[in-house]
Image (cartoon, rainbow over the protein chains, first blue to last red):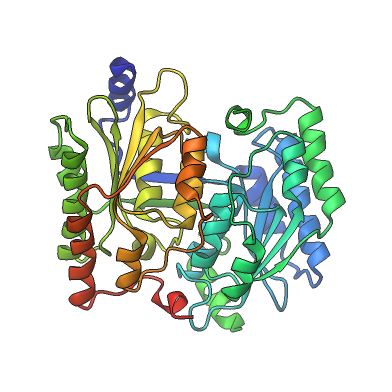
Length: 209
Length: 209
């Protein structure tokens, strides 16, 4: 360990840190604000999300993953998220966690299935990692829609962690519908193009163990 | 669904939400700032954390759970967290997630095992839920120290979600040491006293399914 590093880091932040904030990049704010028309089909919703993943690469604001929360019946966008791990110095801020938190803040409830809340879904460009999987039941979403599969992300070197063997069954038993492989080819294509362009493979160090 | 509820909530927040912040209650800032002496034994570190869980109940700022990040070799406190789910309207903000994020912000790195970082551990008053389990490998901590067991929390009605059957083995294989049952009786006692006092059982609705 290097005590000087801790002390200089803590001195720079004025000692212990008691508050954290994070925010979306400007391009994503604009892109989300523009999405005012409802998207009636889940493929359209996924297409919107995959486009965010591609824009995230183009804007050099992160990796090839994005997520958004929509109301299920009418496809109204509630929130959109990308991975903010490096920009916010917070390993918990995967795209899914960002989208869920922004949705809860937007609707004023930590539980998206509280009374009077609209039925909400998380549309994610890739299958959830172990952390994001575990976060779903606490969020109150009623449906998870995924694009790429674990193996598509693993192929590029991304590590998804250890989920229970029957992770989709675990969600279904908690009342969360799971829809997989929506625009999978396009979603996997975004990951591939990122990897081929030499983008940083998030958590590659751990995956290589 | 109730579109009026969405629109009024979004109108109140000025439309879509693009940024989130959260902060610790004042009593926890004071309690953490006071903890300047290193705690050489893990039992002392756990005792500090269980005391935060008890103070969280007394101050009516949340449930009977707390967590803190310490440097492993010398027991220096890097961050402390409690569950901020209801106060921040964010279901991801379990005590463990708060402590990890504050530690990463304090040290200026999303990866606590990056070069020059001190070896860090997460000391948690209870076994991690499925989400917090999944978050550990991405955080860079080298050791997890737990007080209460899953069954102690379940006994009071708390739901921990679905972890892989061999969740401790999964962490060990990723280089994260796991130490369980540290001051388990005291940690379980804090949960029991909260439940007996009629405290809100977080996620009880889902646990009852």
